[in-house]
Length: 402
Ligand SMILES: NC(=O)c1ccc[n+]([C@@H]2O[C@H](COP(=O)([O-])OP(=O)(O)OC[C@H]3O[C@@H](n4cnc5c(N)ncnc54)[C@H](O)[C@@H]3O)[C@@H](O)[C@H]2O)c1
Image 1 (cartoon, rainbow, N blue to C red):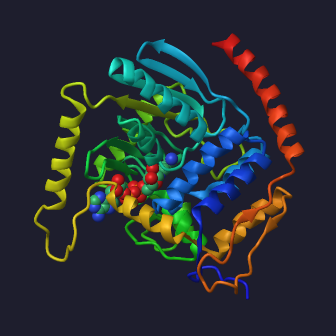
Image 2: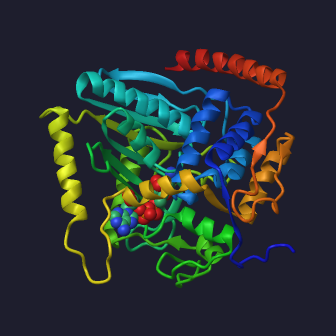
């Protein structure tokens, strides 16, 4: 029987390696180079693993639609302009935000390794999903980081009623020793807008304090909420943080700002998102061991803090997501039937053959494998060759312009 909208759906666990391979194959079939497909799929599956389901593989159909409508260039290669020894600018050339931001953070880390700090502004980019993956990239290099982006209008400024600012996340992180690292990744709204899209996909209601409908009334219906506005967290403070993301990511970079970024679900035109990335060496003022020891002490003080009534455990920022990741690595990532259908439909659109395991075979767990047979190797080589030629031309043109 077909799923009824607004009815909670059955969930199925998917193995993360299968999922990443599946997503990567779809990207390659849509003219993304294997190297870039690896970055994008890794970031999306990292969000799925951390429980940030709103910004994971379920975004693939909307991203692919943008490619089909020429709103996003999957073969774009970001170009770099070194501005000062510790500052660089990345032009994403309307390619995947994941790829340009990954390149930007790599650069910021390498500058920070030499100069203590590296700052990168990214322009003409696209949605890069969950900001925490960039914080993780910095943590892998033992770096502290700031990760800002702007996004399409969804939030009114304080006192306003029209969508103007984005629900633009603020993220930052710091490495630790024995304890958990610090990873803050938060949207300035009460809830990320992706949570409303997720509720819509899964046929669920939303809390009435998340958004207003188009008439300014409270609603628990995700479809009505998407017609209205998101509500900022902390009143004017959330709204101010969203303006801050636009200043650092939009105004500073030369990308769209002040309500002119395109929604990632709107495939009609380029998004022109801007990002702001900073990597900071943590051992500038003491040894790395001392720094990490102090982080561990902070972690312990936070989690051992006296609990309020009704609270069993206190978590460090980012810790809940890390626990979810450990669980999902072992047990698989839960997807609703409609979400699997929509990913499989995307694979069908790529005309690749895929294998589905028998849903009856293993009970309810890991029964539906999103496994794909690889496109013939000649096809992959041809795709790669076409992309490389196109990119070479583009880089030559861009270098002339810079
Ligand atoms: N790229 C974009 O344009 C865009 C836009 C909006 C949101 N997002 C992404 O959406 C995701 C979700 O954002 P969100 O604001 O809904 O996140 P959230 O409210 O789930 O979490 C925000 C932060 O609070 C921490 N936290 C949550 N509960 C906690 C608890 N009980 N104890 C201690 N710490 C806790 C989390 O670790 C996290 O760092 C983020 O990954 C964000 O990057 C992306």
